[in-house]
Every structure is written in C-alpha cells, then in structure tokens.
Image (cartoon, rainbow, N blue to C red):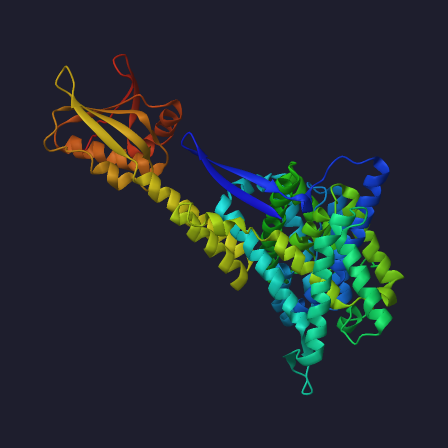
Length: 535
C-alpha cells in the first residue's frame, strides 16, 4: 500500500513516500528475477481478460477488439515505454469516450480515431509535453489515486449483477450472492496472508488458482469469465480503417482523437509517477508519450480500440514483484496465448477470484493516509483532494485532473496576490522610496496600484523591486498605469533593482507600455516613464 506522510521542518513541508512489503522489491538472482517477472506477467494477464472484455462492451465493440488492444498496447509500451513494470491496455476512461463515436459512425471510425490519437501522442512526446505532468500538485495526485481506487471498486460491483427473466440487470441475492461474497473474501484472504508463508509465487496468482480449483472441483455454480464472452480468436490482422479519406472524416474523428489522446496521456503519466514513487525509481515521461502513441497508432491498424496505462493492473504487477520490462511483455504474450490457445481454460476462471484480486488492488491503491492528513494540510489542498476524487468518480480522470490543477493554480495565485506589500520612506534627497515585497502579476496588480499615493507623494518617487518580480503583462500594465497617474500629477517615478528577467520583460514590452530602459548610476537600473500625451 502506498502511504504518504506529511511533516514539517525548518518552515518547509516535506513529503515522504513509504511503501509496505506488499510493494517491496529487493535484490534477486537473475533466475529468480526472471521467474518473478514471468509469474507477475501471468497474474496481470489473467486480470486483463475481464477488464478488456468489459471495456469493449462499454465502447460498444466486439470483445476481441478490447483484447487485441490490450495485447498490442501492452506489448509495445512494455518494450518501449518510459516506465518498466507499468502495464497498459484497454481502459474504461477511454471506452466511455469511444461509445458515442461507435454509436454514431461505427467501429471503423473508431479505428481511424485511434490512429490519429496515437499520432497526437507521438507529437506530444517529440515536443516533450510530458514534462508538464510535473505541474500536477500533490493533492491532485492523491485525489487521482483515491478516485481511481473508487472507480476500480465500483467497476467490480457489476460482477454482482445477473440477467433477470425480463433481460434486465439485477443484483444477486440469496445463495448465489453469499457464494460470490465468500469466494471473493477467500481470494482476498489468500492474497493478504500468502506472502507470510511464501513469496516464491505472486499471492494474487495463488488466490486465483486456489479459488478456481475449488470452484471446478466442487462444481460450484458461479459466474466465470466465459459468461462474459468467448475470448477465443486468431491473430490480429492488419487492417486499414474503412473510412472515406476526406476532410469530413477528419473533422469527425478529430475531437474524439484529441480527447482520447489527452485522457490517455494524463492517466499514463500519472500512473508512471505513482509507480515511480512506489518503486523509488525514475520514469521517462516523454518516452512514455511516444510509446503510447506508437502503440495506439499500431492498434488502430490491427483492429484494436486503443488504450493507455492501467493503474489497477500496474499495481498488481508491482505488488507481484514485477519491476522490469519482462513482466509487461510476458503479460501481453500470455494474453495472446489465451486468445489463440487457452480460451477454454481461461473462460473457466470464476469472476469472484478476479474481483477479489481487484478489491485488493483497491485496498493497496487508495491512499488511506489521506484520512490522517486531511485536517493537517491547508484547507485548499484538502478541498482539491476531495474535489479531484469526486470528479474522477462522477466524470472522468482528465476532467478531474484539469479541474484540480486549475483550482490549485487559482488558490496559489490568490495566496501570492495577498503577499505583495511595500514599505515607504523618505530618502536623503527628499524623494519617496517604496520598497516592494512579493510578485507583481495579474492577481496582485490591483493591490499593487493601491499601495501608492500619486496625489500626495513628492515629485520624485523611487520603486525598489529588489524583493519583488514583474511576472507578466498584467504587471507591466500596472506599472504603466501607475506611471501615467504620476505623470498626470506632474511627477516622475523610477524603478530600481530590477532583475535581468524583469528588464528583459520590460524591454520586450516597451512598445505596448511606452517605456524606455535606462542605466542609472545611482540606482543600478532605472526606468523613466515619460509620456508624450500630444501623440
């Protein structure tokens, strides 16, 4: 379980990420490492099957479309991605966007949209846009983790429904419900307790195996993977999307491709950061963008629905000991093997066992420490944490993250705007000096103007920016407005101790704000504002 602890030292807040033995790695011999990676990949592949099938149903496409996407996206990102140990495949976050495109225009347009989505993601990687994921604040990250854990949990509840006599979905009851709950609980107990006995085989794999043998041996009447759909099929075949190559087609798929690319990259990069924190290693954001893009472009040409990183399966992989690319590669190859050769066997796995595995993923993914720190962190951060979690559940991940970042940025701007102030004094030559503190930008521009008194100040005014910075055009405009007020009063102002970046900003904007930058031997750097109102 990933736990985040907050502390305070020397006026700075520090965050320490601690992991329990569920995610512990440790040094292994090469043979043991290979065995661990392969078994971890097998465990992940078993969990991939029902997820891919379910998401294919959500998108309104054939189950093999989801399975092919899980295989192709999984193997390409495992080989070329920026985060070894991370698992990618068909996801629900993308499926909910695809459903309207499929309903309106058909599955071929979906394949075209996935190809274009991949191209956008490749471009994002080439232009290194992945680095902007560092702009996601920690409360947003916590909200993302908690929201995804809740989404994974809610997604499993669908397995507790059966088709009624009228064809409608209704909740299980009676003996079938008790049997389902019992098998889920047994799987969770095995996963929790098995590491205390042995770590030679991943606990989730043992849980799936034991419960499957129990169901088959006792001939228990429970739902299995085969009840969802048949997963048997052949190799994915190269297929150019059968859509008209016209501008009209481009405009149809463009908005879907942009949304899919954004959601896919956001979820992938946040998962990359999460796995990097848990394993205490570094991942390449731009490299992951390119890998996701290549994977989706190829998937679109082979009849897949596209995909991105899967936090649930990534957590299964990490908790099972998967740390290298071999685990992700083997997971994809095992999945392909299920499709080609092992469908009859995999279809006999009880869904209860897989639900139990995913419930343990929920327990391990949710940042339970957020309950302890919620009253210790700033109220605004607590609000963002809860807001992102709620939006992730109600809407989707991309919207939640964007909203969280915007709210965090606005809170930061508001707090920074309140920090600007000035200390005034009369200099030796009778001039009045304003010693500024705090940043001058759009949020503080109004407060900045209120600090001065052009009507009662002397003819010569000095504004010292040694403790301040001019950040943006709003700051420049505020200075220009202040200079005009003093000019209208027949007075003059000088700016002192401007940093080099502020000088460059002022010089670049001189045509907009009508300023000239002069070297002043007395003040170091001064800017005289002289307006010619006759122009």
